Image (cartoon, rainbow, N blue to C red):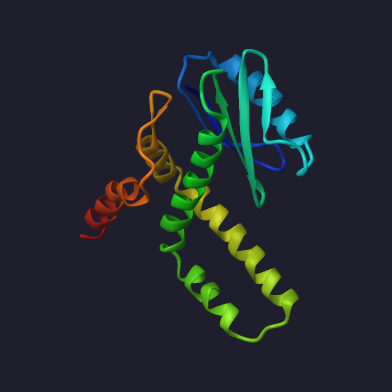
Amino acid sequence: MIKFFLMVNKQGQTRLSRYYEHVEIPKRTMLEAEVIKNCLSRSKEQCSFIEYKDFKLVYRQYAALFIVVGINETENEMAVYELIHNFVEVLDRYFSRVSELDVSFSVLPRIHLSFFVFLFLTACSIVWQTFKIMFNLDRVHIILDEMVLNGCIVETNKNRILAPLLVLDKMAES
């Protein structure tokens, strides 16, 4: 079972937290600080699974964001590792369609630009997408809620996960 789900930046600031077991607020703060410290201090060559107190941590790094999931001993680490990647793919699919800026960046590989200019623009796109996510945390919570219910993975199909958001977007447009 999943105990908690965190999105954290490289500075150690929690951007999203979802707990599936009751943890008091002061304990959450301490837990998040310790978990973040453990994950940020590890090198990229180290395993993404950490034994921590009475549970395990599974994490992945995407650009400047770390996604950390706390699980009990019975949960499959690889399934959670793939859940994290699926979550990021769903975020990418939803938020990349929102901005014209992302559309313009998708054309860049066809244009013969220097490699460094392309890397710079790709980094700008990642930063822009991170801002879009942070300003739309309600949408991120909906996506996570469609995937995980009471600490159990309930949906992995990207189209089914995004269906409620697309309905909300259509209603907002009209």
